[in-house]
Length: 632
Image (cartoon, rainbow, N blue to C red; front, side, top):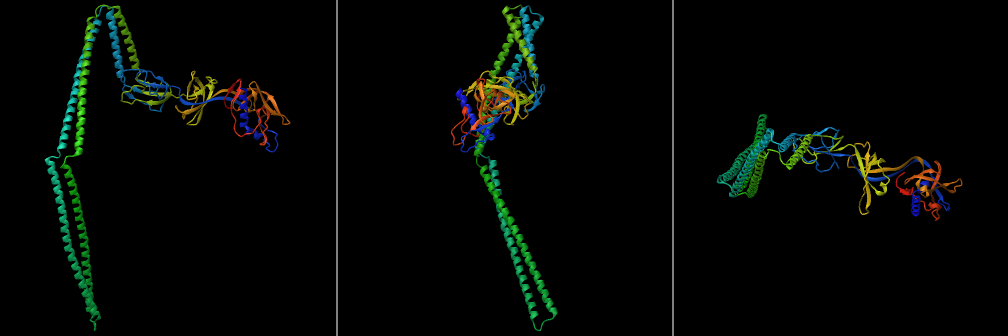
């Protein structure tokens, strides 16, 4: 054990060399004189913590169902059904809450129609009255009321028998009607299949041929119209071309006459030249008019021919469509046959199911009718034997029946008193499994959790020994990155082990105080429990300690810079700080390690010499004979 402690001290000294270096500063020249790393004795707090990861959850989760008291469940997300069982049918009326909504204690969460529960109460009261009446009869001579009660039982059983007969007739009649409908559907499906396989009718063929003929005639008419239009346009344009040629010849003649008169010698008079010029102008206008008519007729002819061609194209498309329709309507359709066959198969299956349902209904109704008949017979037998006291065994049985009927009535009344679900505490709605107008399913109608939160974490057996109920704890919630203060509420006394290393852990619950709204149930968290703390005490770095528990010392430097060992009384020790109860005071300086020349292999005594290092320190220190983990 001493060797382990010495090794730990050596490792810690090497790990924190940088701290002392900043205070003293080594001389790394040729000298082999050690340079000491020092730290000041201070006043502060020393605390030891146990840390584990866990999960935030609500302190209490409730499951609420109609007809029962709220139950505390293990988790707000549990899918387990309610432990309360009831045959009552609950038709939900209102659900004024939603998932995530915050509610206060006593708030209405949902309501249901009480009719079914009230009927159950009425039935239970009637059964109790009957049991009490039977006990009274069996204990002595029957009274008029007892006889009347017996007669009422007969009447009730007779009524039930009559009702069952009526129900039997209705159920069988309904199934027989469904069978007829299924048979009719099968007949129709077979008829549709036969029609699909037979193909189109004569009327359909005639109609298809007529549509095709009309399309062919329309195409021929459109083609004839194109030919006629082309001939008419050719005649009109020919006449226009001839008119243009005649106008051009007239213009040429008038121009030649004007040129000749202008060049004649002797020159004609001005009157003749004016007439020649007028003839030229008139010929030019005639040519322009003829050319304009030719251009207009050309455009009109082009438009007419284009329109006629488009009509031919449309007629051809119509003929193609009519031909395709004719091909479809004159041959049986494979898709129609396949669809009709599928309908036949479906109708046959429905018919078989209807037959099976009718047979089952007949059997079930016959059994129910026989049971009702037996109930009636039993009521008649009971009424016939309800004279005089019965045996002790019979009376004891009657009393047991009365007790059972009383319990049943109490249960029914309790169930009927829970038609309105109210919040058992302040909290938040986690699940809503009902809707207005529907029948509430089995299990919880609504689950909620209280607003108070707690964190549960698994601590290793080496850490749990220092934990106690009531210790302060700090819970860091990962997702919102917030820290919440808490208190250890419970420690599971039985540990569990898992994994290949079989580490034993204990579940510890910490109640949270004033958790912000961003902290939600189910979030991951780190739980740190302060297992020991010394406040406002004299402290030194833990690595400054030399020795073992009960015999610790620290090293100081005298005025000449020489190393001295000073005995100290040590209190609480964490991984970074040690509480000094006596030996040194705040403001003094202690040695935490040495740094030697790189060419030197010598080390200082007491386990502190050797190669200096840069980095942080940590580890375990022993106080009171045991190792303690934690942070300063």
